[in-house]
Image (cartoon, rainbow, N blue to C red; front, side, top):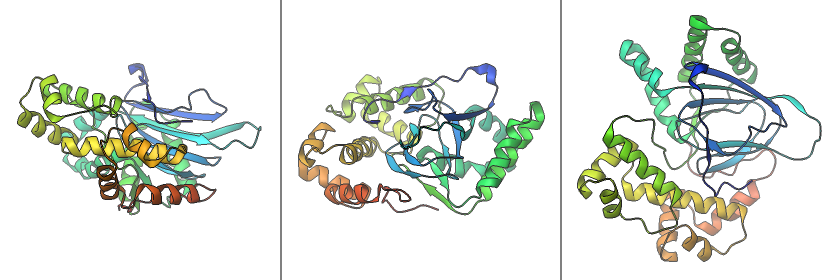
Length: 303
C-alpha cells in the first residue's frame, strides 16, 4: 500500500449517533488509507503489520491502542503470510468533535480531557495499556445503548486520560473540525496544501485564495491549526518525503523536488529540523527497524 496519495474521505452516517462502535475481521474491504471528521479510538486485537498515522510509519502488534483526531489519515495493514481469516482483528470507537465540545461547555470537569484530545491531532498511542482491559472497555461501549453507552464511553475517556504513558505519533498536526466562514477557509487551505504539496505554495497566494490579507490569513491559520503556515507546509512535505524514503528507492534529490522543495540543501535542513536526522539516516534506520517487533518512527517520544 502506498500512502503518497490523498486518503479516501469517509463519511459517517448521522444515524449512528454521536458514539459509533465498529469491529473488523480479516479480510475486510474497509481496511484502507482514509480519513474522516470523527475521532477514532483503535485497538488492535490480533495480527501484526504496518501502521500509518499521518506521516508516522511503524509496526503494530496485538494490544496497540491509538486515538486519532479529526481528518488525520490512518490505516493498519496486516502482514501477508497467513491465509487463515481473522474473526476479530480490531475494535473501533468513533465519536464526534461537536459532542465533546458541548460536553465540555456543560461540564467544566470534562475539560481535563481536552489536552489528550488536542494530542490526538497528531495521533496518540497509549503505550503499555493492558490489552484485556482495553478490550473490556470497548466491549462495554459495544454492549450498551442510549445513556448507558454514553456513560461507558465517558469511562473509556477517563481511563485514557489517566494513563501516564502517551506517545504522539505524527509530526504534522491536522486541524480539528471547525465552524464559521473564516475557519472554513482555513480548512480549505489545509486541504489544498495536503493535495498540492508538490507545487509552489506561497502565503500570499493562499491568502488571496481565502480573500484575506497575508497577515490575517497567517494569524487565523495558526490559531486554527496550531502551526504557522510555512511550518505546516514544510511538515506536510517532509511527511510525504518520509513515505517515499521508506517505500521507494528514489534518490534523495529526486524525492526533494517531488515533494515541493527547490533545492536539496533547504530540504535537508528542514528534514533535520523536523525529524532530527538526515534523510539518508532516516531511510537507513526506518528500513532496518521495519522488521517484526520494531517501530519505524525515530522522532522523540512525547508523554
